[in-house]
Image 1 (cartoon, rainbow, N blue to C red):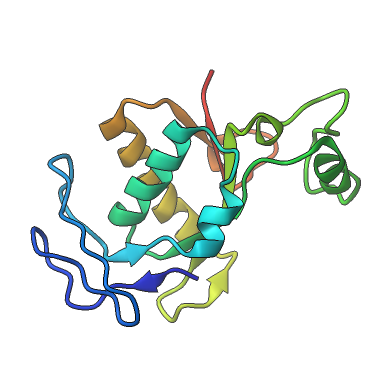
Image 2 (cartoon, one colour):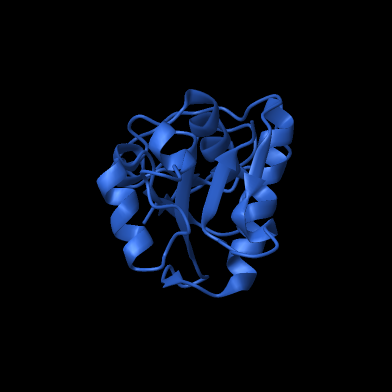
Length: 160
């Protein structure tokens, strides 16, 4: 889980208990949530396209809810394991996922109490932050929750 920064205000330094992090608000932004990407989220984004990483970081600043990155770049074997569990329609070999190219991430949203949730309302709200972040940064993305057949609320990918 990402940590909520303490005493954050727009335009002021953000101070996080335990770690001192100084960061000023971007010229782009309207609001800053105070959420900070965890080391685990950063590790889960190894091999992910830098444009998507920038969108993730900005989305977290804009999001009304905290979230963590649960998956980034995957091997064919990892993708195939998800396919076998019916968690994906792509087998990783004949049909490749954008995860395999480092062009997609999956996230988990946290509710108001900091608990991971699968409640759709949180994914919808966080997806709006992703869309705004992508728009601000000039990066085209697709949210899996907008797909017609296989709705995938935790999925964000770069659009080709």
